[in-house]
Image 1: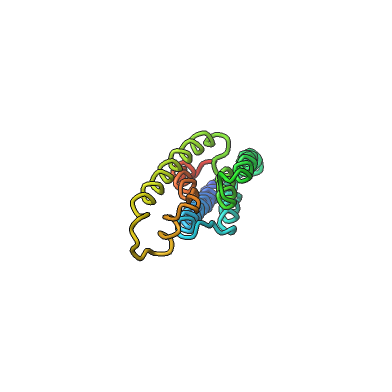
Image 2 (image 1 turned 90 degrees about the horizontal axis):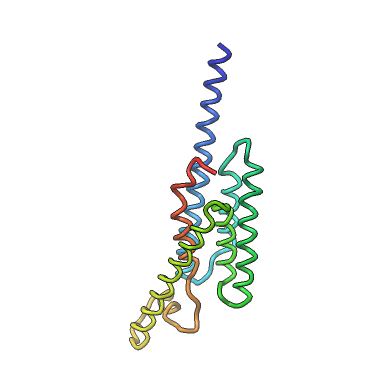
Length: 180
């Protein structure tokens, strides 16, 4: 009888862990969408979003290996933070982009980091090219524009690279459910 109770308890624990993981991955995905929308709309990523992404990772895998996983993944996040700070220093990325990509590094770990970076760069190229095309098309059209579009059309503003980072992060989501 004790074996059955233990087995049922183990199954219940497994279902709870799966639910926590799914909830944390959903929070990660929603925070990425919020970051992308904010960056496109205001060219700004609120500081709370990378914090939410990092906190969701810490909660995503509540198993016996969580500390080792955190160490492995945190090192990838720190490397992305350092590389991002160098890019920020040379005005290649904004501060919000640096924090967002570092928080995503927690989720990628070393295993998925190359694919995440390649995807981010490819999406970034598409976003940048799209902004250039929109600027060329709309630069001589003096019609009333929504504030976010007026900001994007100005040539003295940056590119919402958070959109590319978020898109690359969202591609990770299916592989994050139930794994680490």
